[in-house]
Structure formats: structure tokens, C-alpha cells
Image 1 (cartoon, helix red, strand yellow):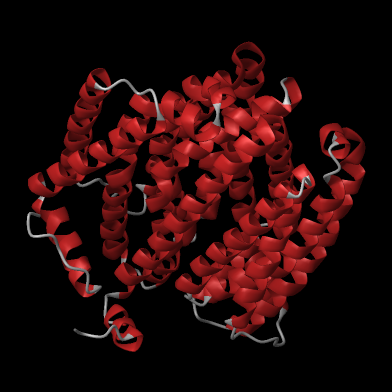
Image 2 (image 1 turned 90 degrees about the vertical axis):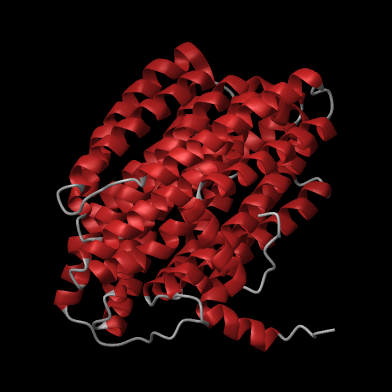
Length: 494
């Protein structure tokens, strides 16, 4: 019997083409993160309920906003400049100085705004928020610097380390009865351990830098910061406004529904992390054909998962919320149906704005996002008081579609943005057939317990995969080739 040899397997993996290899590492890491996030949220939903979860989600929302102020867009600027391969140590040193200064400013803004953050103060989250911002400074410096040098796998593994640490500590703290403080403490611990992990692989060192290095970072960071601010509006403005107009329990129900739909985009997130440094390099070399091909393929492989999740979620969404998270969360089913469409639009927003930034066009990325942001804020203010979390979902969908359309228009000025019609058509067809099969299954076997629901999910997944591999030879051959490169046996019937 052959003996598994880790060194030989690693050598096999390293022979795979870099973009494919890093995409698969990123995908595996993102899949693991998604699974960890789902399981932990299910546990917390059943243990502490929607109100405490809502208070924690509100803490995370405020952290993201004030952490963005502390980053100031310089994280993305550092990744861009370091990835270009020139004066890496000088850019690294300038980035460290700027990041520390902005953290001080961010914490200062937080203390000034404290009287207005009533729910955050009442829940006791303010000290945890300050600690999280300080710790994230170290982690942000280490992770962006490692990412900029092309160590995508290390950066992705650090996210896995972050989430594992966070979840383990949060579970222990919740079991011990620490509630929302335990959730926040685990969050901070995960950030710290992730930073230490990245720091271990950081091979940049302090070096003298000139004003030109700072100016170069500023030139890129300004528009990156504004663009990132827009992305945060899509991510957290709805959460904060739901907290303002409604209750923390409503936040918990909404964010759980949003998390359940996020499985649709984990391929997109993995490809985004892998392709950004590559697109940046290709853009610098004026190799736009490679960018066009990579983007088109990224659309295909993102929809490979997003399409069946959309179909399955529409059919099984309410039952999944009920059995996975509890009866109190099943009221989020109407919002979930809309948020599934949001995730499909998110595929195009995320990949197209990534290309705009990587091709050194952050100004265009911001202009695109700013229009959608203004619409998002206005729609949330109008729809949430009237329609609650369903209104928040609708506002996000409208503005995400607007953002995707404007991003396509802007990016088309630099490259030919296209999808691959035949593979995408095959994906849609396979997802439709899968949906019909799941509907018939649910009519024959009532979805009255979690095992029957899981059976529906498994049947749908098998039908979708088998049909897609049968009707699309290109996807079939690529997946088979990748399986062979990794040493995985390919099933004979396929």
C-alpha cells in the first residue's frame, strides 16, 4: 500500500499553475471560514438568541467603520505599491507610520462620538471596541504587507487562524455565561492571533522613505478610502439603521439571513483575494488580455456556486432558517429571498471594482460606488421604517445592481468586460433543473425535520453537479484536470 508523503504531495501542489494553485488555496480557506462561521452562528443563535447576537453584530459594524478610518485606505495602497515590486521596504515603513497615526485619530473620533452611540455604550461594548481598533492596527500592517508581497496563501490561512481562534474563545465564553462580552473578546483574540501569524511570514523591514513614497500612497489611498467607505455602506449601513429604527433582535435576524446567503459568494471572495495582485501586475505590464480572460473566467466560477445557491435558497430558505437557527429566525425568510439576489449582483460588483482598483483606477471605483452609496442611504432611510428588514434587503438589492451596472460601464473603458455565454448558460440550466427536482422532492416528502431538509440540499447538489458536468465539457475537463494535479481520484461515472 503506498504511503502518503507530505513532501511529495506539496511538490505536486507547487507544480500547479500559480493562479490556479492560489485560487484553490484561497477557495479552501474561504470554504473553511464559511463553515466555521455558519456552525458558530448556529450555536450562538440557539444559545443566546437574536438580541445578544444583534448587539454583537452592531459592535462589529461600528468596528468596521472606525477601523476604516484607522486604515484610511492606506492598507489597499500599501498592497498596490508593494505588489508593484519597487521600493517595497520604503513603502512598508511609510505605511506603518501612517497607519499608527490614523489609529490615534480613529480612537479620538470614537471617544468624541461616544454620547451618540447609546446602544453600544449600554451593551458595554465601547472598551472592547477601542481594544479591537488598537489590536487591528498591528494585524492590518502585517497582513497587508504580506499580501502585497504576493503571499496570498499565507494571507488566506491567517484568516482561517483568525476565525478558528475567535470561534473557540467565543464558544467557551458563551458557555461560561459571558454573553456579548464573550463574543467581543473572542473577536479581539482572533485579530491578534492572525496578526502574529502574518508577522511570522513578513520579510519586509524598516527602511528610509522619501516624501514621494508618502505622496504615492496618498495618491492611491484617497480614492481607495472613499471606495472602501462606499463598500462599508453596503455592508453595515443597513445594520446600523435597523438598530436605530428597530431592535437588536431585528439586527440579529437580519444578519443571520444575510450570513446564510453569503455562501453564494465565497468563490468570488477567494478569487478576489487571488486575482488582485495578479491583475495589478498584469496592468503594470500592460497585459490587458490576461486581465480580460481572468475576469471572464472569474465570473463563470463565481456563478458556478451562486446560481444553485439562489435557486435552492428560494425553495428551502425558510426551513433552513427554522431548523439551523431557531424558530425566532425563520421570520427573516422574506428578507433572505431578496438577499440571495443581492449576492448574485455582488459577484459582479466585487470582481469589477477589484479590477478597477488593481488597474490603478481607484478614482473611477469611487465615483461608481459613491452614486450607489447615496442611493443606498436614501432607500434605507425610507424603506426600513416602513418595511423593516425586508425594506433593508430591497434597498441593498437596488443599489447593488446599480453599482454593478456603473462598475461595468467604467471598467469597459479599459478592458473588454464579458461573460462566457455557453458555460454561464449551462450553469443556469443546471440550477433550474436542480430547483425543479428539489420542489418535487419537497412535495413528495414534507420538510418537517432537519434531516429531510438536509436530504433536499444533498439531492439538489448532486443533481446540479452531475448535470453540469454532463452538459459542459469545458468545466468538466478543468475540474478533472485540477483533481489530477492534486492527486484526487476522479469518479468513473463522471
